[in-house]
Amino acid sequence: MRAPTPLSVLDLAPIPLGSTAGDALRNSLDLARHAERLGYRRHWVAEHHNMPGIASAATAVVVGHLAAGTSTIRVGAGGIMLPNHSPLVIAEQFGTLEALYPGRIDLGLGRAPGTDQLTMRALRRDPMSGNEFPSDIQDLQYLFGPVQPGQAIRAVPGAGLEVPLWILGSSTFGARLAASLGLPYAFASHFAPTDLLTALDVYRREFRPSAQLSESYVMAGLNVFAADTDEEAQRLFTTPQQSWANRFRGLPGPYPPPIDDIERYWSPAEKAQASAMLTHSVVGSLDTVREGVERFAALTGVDEVMVVSAIFDHDARLRSYAILAEAASLAS
Image (tube, rainbow, N blue to C red; front, side, top):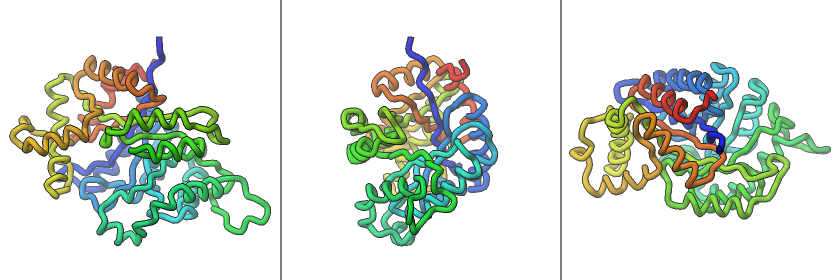
């Protein structure tokens, strides 16, 4: 019998309607402690900017907050949008985190801006900076590596700490880059399902061993909404369904509370678009969730599943992760 696929948490630090960013960040720490007790492998937060419903813009700061309040679970960025930053600054930030919490820090890296074009300009991001992503990754590897004779620029802290790097992606570009550099790869199938299987195939076929990784290692995102009944889980799932419909309407905002009838909320076109984005979602009670996660693991063959549960009510979110842990036998 195949061992259960390890599970991890991708936490968008959601800001529900009527609450604050401070509430969201305190909830994130509570969730990280909960995930640690339940046996999840890692807890990541992601860089987004100018999004009223997401509180993790200062991602390295949030990672430090989570690491300080936990003791064993790996914490990290899923990810840092590297073209927004100097590799040296990121090496210093995550080198500092690794120095404070050794052996527990992950650094996932993406090349998207994590925002809209107007906010890109406010970030002083060059629209063409994404083209430098492969060389920026190599700069980071150099800065985290052992100090070389005559090395003029060092990350302090950072140099010699070998913080584990991950490549994040939603296309074959990231898959090929991760494979060529011998790095683990995480695919954003929780909102970008189209190229999932193609990208995983490319990554595995083209993977070349590196100092960090001897064999390919891949993780994929999965939305999971678990509750005591299938009906309650479907109701919880109306929060992301509404959120996607709102984005298509040009109305981003805090996470909305669940509703009883999503069909009365969205148009047929919005339903089609949102449902496409949420293709890889498992919604239901314990048995339904167990079967859905097993199907996803069998479909993809991933080494790890990164679970996203953007649930409005914090207690319901904690309950969802607990049901999933039981379904996946994490404690065994």
